[in-house]
Length: 137
Ligand code: AMP
Ligand code: ZN
Image 1: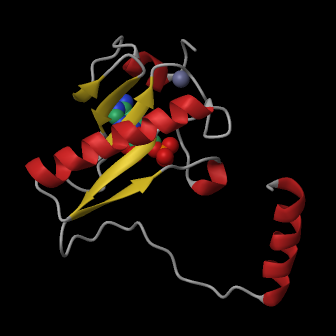
Image 2: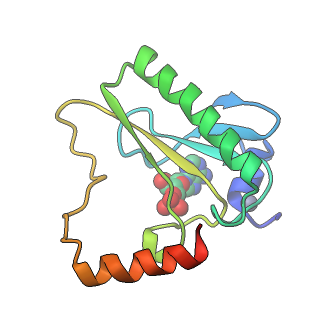
């Protein structure tokens, strides 16, 4: 996808601050970091989101995430980290090439990776359990 910015970054056509690279992935520093060290895992092949990426590559992405967050904890060092992966416009995805955000967290930082908890209603629980029985087991 020549018009996809993350394809071009992952291929090395556009320079990036690369902290890790292997045959399948490039890990770069986000240009608009939530906190110091915020990184993005980009597959080198184009998949719009998690539903498109093959299972084996999705699994490998998590192995890369483990490697990078271990580096973050040891070397930055951060106190914790969030792994965020947005899919679809309603979920905040702005670049439609699968990527994982690795966001180092520091005590007292004000990065906003939270939500206001609602309440699981009996109706929603029953509806979703029923659908899952049919489609996921
Ligand atoms: P999302 O909203 O999940 O699609 O995340 C897109 C992320 O990509 C944002 O955090 C942006 O700051 C980041 N971003 C966009 N363009 C670039 C770029 N050229 N280099 C590094 N990060 C980028
Ligand atoms: Zn792409």
